[in-house]
Length: 334
Image: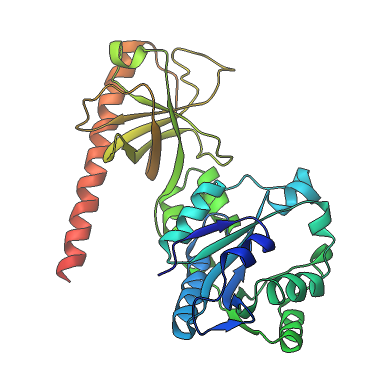
């Protein structure tokens, strides 16, 4: 099995993948590919990329994805660029989990934006990456000013010798799963809905940062997350799971501005109280997975009132996970 590789140019791809199976052309291994931003790696993306892996395994080819950094809209129309659901690190980790062999991360700039559909699909995907199959969604667009569509991709494929398979979208609760739908759900605090679209909880990753120290003395101890992710859930209190110190702990997380202590205009904070966790951490990686929104953030009259509400929040989060475990047990018995 090929070890997952992250490459940053067609030249790196050619250098990395010489002839190592019978499925080669010249001295470069053939590839089954998909192309896109894959922001969020939602169920629709997963369907496409699982198809890439299955087709590659059946033909002895590489299973690969071509993606872009930064997001093309950040270069072409910055004011319209959406807040990204995931970091590049998260996207690549998802690609590896799905069983892909390689990801080609192309730096998106004005020069790449000027590539015509023929230059991109024929010149890069066919001639440099030696694609023998492409799997894309039905709304796939590519090339200069997004002039290329799936019909043109199929015509180019016929000329350059690769096939094109159009993958139908995934429908959840009557809605097409898309990155835009995930963004709307997360921004509105509907993290349970986002989880249904993603096939897993929405997650924030980053590092532990030192807080003001009030948690352990006035309320409850928390771990504070510093993240560079662009999309944040709506302010409020959530039932979450937090990965820290090599373990995954159920938790309750506040996303907000700490109005009881800090008032308006403070920087947004992401503070998690981990259940059954006694370690004192001041640094290290941290990931918070959002399962359910419990309530709005609001200002309290003082520490005692806040402490009572937090105790109720923790009880509510524990009850959420008790019900989740019960539902899972029923599913296993069914």
